[in-house]
Length: 587
Ligand SMILES: Nc1ncnc2c1ncn2[C@@H]1O[C@H](COP(=O)(O)OP(=O)(O)OP(=O)(O)O)[C@@H](O)[C@H]1O
Picture 1: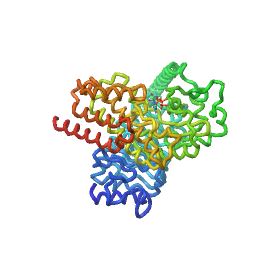
Picture 2 (picture 1 turned 90 degrees about the vertical axis):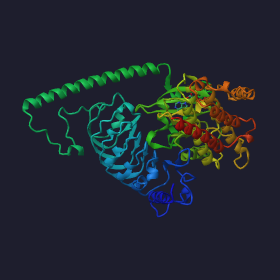
Picture 3 (picture 1 turned 45 degrees about the vertical axis):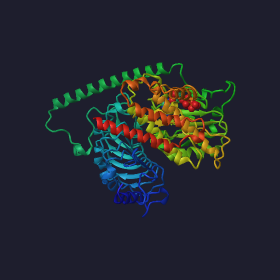
Picture 4 (picture 1 turned 180 degrees about the vertical axis):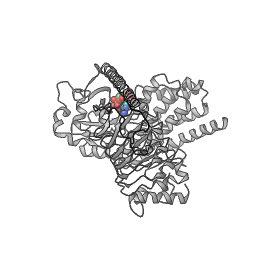
């Protein structure tokens, strides 16, 4: 990034800070490149382009100068994520935001933004997630329905007016416009989302709200219509009656159809959940005798205040009691505890990890979770909330329906080609390197890295889950013992690389796979180890061997001989670059 552009970025942060110069703790200085250590800046794998600005929960209270940011050629084309949620930023969103053409996520919830949203926002046609919730935005929404790939729109707790755009809800995973002043009919939700997403908008009508819409169309108050709300001219009385008849018929048909759809969905859900669903308070942690009392069931009335919600846009207002009451399904009982899928009435689905036998002091647990949440990398699933008492430790994550790498490799993964596997390897290495760097002083490693803890998000990007859930209880951060926890992650990562190369997920701790690969490689049968589908797609054998060598370094039985994760990330980046060059060359 050129020096002038760096200065513009530094001014951008200063404005966000509401000060003349940015807070030095961010490390945004013009003698270093943004890709080298600027807090909250995530670059591409070649460290050339700024991809993400992650300035959420950073105590910012100034203004969002999107104009200077998005007018920077070098940044605007590459920037895919802006996260500013959880600050106290004021003012409007400048119309120039639309020059940040590549944005897929714009997350600015929980701030003090106000004024109208610029119409140009609807020109961000790569946007997948837009979160403007908990601000003071007013006026009508731009025609966001033009953004065809939008999957998430959160706008609750603002002062927005006008109609809700006719989104194509088929792609949506979350939607919320509650606590605003929207009016008019709710668009066709295609069977998704219930009334909680529309609460407290007195002018809204139609399903899923119990309030039916008036027969004649309500006054239209969107700017595109001129906002005059006048009746169409030149219609005879008969024509008006006929039109009203059609509207009535359409309304009856839509209501009937929605009712049938809801009924069918309910039956399907009841069927799916039969035998499997109970509430989390009735499901006992593994290893617990059925006669024993859990802290959860006894303490619940006393401890709801101890439920710490870290990221409120998704789980705002979540209480410990809500977690206990909601229908829960046991997903698995691992070595370290049980995992439940918890369904909420507003269709939010979370997973709750109930950690077994972790004798960590409550304060240390809290501090640890907050540090992990603050570290924030897009390829690491953040804890959304946690609960901690002496006897009970619960962690809440977003449910990811695409499942884990482990499950994926267990199934028919024929189409999982070499470039995709390389991208998964590089993505996880980069995310792990980021977390190790951010949390090295705290001595917090992942602690249980394996392919069932690599989860695909809705965009099929591999994310690390359950970071930092284990602590070596004999650990002494000041001594070299703490480096062992990081070296254990390297070994776990090496096993994941072996799984990607061989296409065989490991059931045990990975030693068997590592031993087998060692023996095959030492007898120079290297090609034998690779997944047959990789060989048949014509993946580059030399590059697969290079990755195999990285994996073998990582699973070295001597922890001290293993490379660091940043070294690993660099090696994988080089292999990936070679792959990209060769693909570019051949095409
Ligand atoms: N956020 C999530 N969304 C969807 N599935 C998940 C999520 N987190 C974990 N899973 C999946 O749920 C299953 C059970 O998870 P669990 O953590 O109990 O398994 P585990 O990793 O083998 O156990 P442990 O971490 O205790 O060793 C695993 O298949 C895991 O991949």
